[in-house]
Image (cartoon, rainbow, N blue to C red; front, top):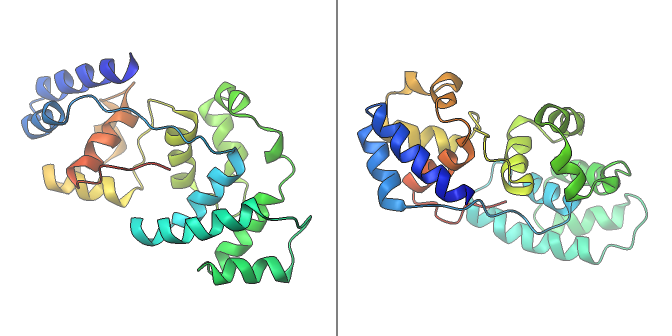
Length: 203
């Protein structure tokens, strides 16, 4: 299975590269699976927007309220009543604008998970980067946790950077360094997040 192959590959690769601390960490943690979102694509994207620049705890609380609003939303287009509900859920004006742009995007509604999995990484990126509020980090998180792409490393993720700093010098934190762990860079993300003890990372 993929997650077991990823574990074996990364444990051996880090050991071969002389990265003893990281290799020992991977061996201690053992095989990790990518937990793919079971949500529809649009709620999944909204959840990413909700979680931007928030702690895990705050994001979870606001998402719970936002999810309830989405499930009971009968409005055909953005309006003040809906915006007020989002505001009372704890969302900023900017995030409300982004979320409206997503939930009323007719093009996004055409994509099933099967269709999304068929898109190349570059096509997936180009489709989403045009949507206001969706940036490179959001797209990378979506590639990992919605599509289940095994080979994504989000160099912009602050958690990954902090985990790296616990193990290495800052000047090694770059795309070239982590390219060494292809084709299982998404799994490397999981192991690095575990360095910070974020054991339940999922989007």
